[in-house]
Amino acid sequence: MSSRDSSSFHDKRGGKFIYVSSCLLNQNRRFPGIAVSEGAIPGLFEEIMRNGIGIEQLPCPECLGWGGISRDSVFRFIPIFYRYSGSRLYPLIKAMGRVWLYKYRRLCKRRAHEIVRDIKSARSSGYRILSIIAMNDSPTCGATRKLSILDMVANLKERGLRVKDIECPQFDMMRKHLPNLLVAGQGHFMSELINGLKQNGIVIPVLAYDPWSDPQKETDRLTEALLEL
Ligand code: SF4
Image (cartoon, rainbow, N blue to C red; front, side, top):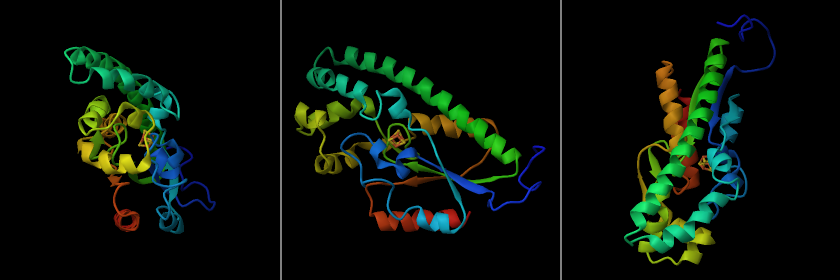
């Protein structure tokens, strides 16, 4: 226990908080074309705040590693992936993509380790970390479902989309196709975070938010689960 743990002084803090995927608090960080609201996810945090639970925003690794909030690096690759998908050269293009993704995974690992250190420090100072709420459709933050970013363009092409539909993604088009492209598994950052916690013997429940479900039901489900912890 730290020498200045939360029981050694008195103020108004409640001593418990959660970590949430960055874009749950700020949809402006979502991949272009898939923001489901203007800012924070409406209604998701009210009950949490009423119950005196602090909300800590996780980093958005895609904004850090994929060319900023506009994901410029991904959009640079889209025409190449589109053009060669289905061709004999596609395995080579995909292998280059894997190298790019390997570097990104290392970034995710570094950021995850920082969070694990922060969580260890908070716990040793007497704070309770109730949960991590993860955006559950992301190649990066998905907790039980993720998108394969390397297959995204080829999959959308197979569904009949033109390259300009993918380069300038519109919400209705993404809502129609993206949920069908999700596969079981953890995103790069969430997987590193969960592994990092496990290696340190820390158990924190991860709650998965599905942005493509009914928002009210999703809010009720998560709030109920969180308040039971
Ligand atoms: S899911 Fe994760 S990586 Fe994607 S926008 Fe949200 S915080 Fe960023």
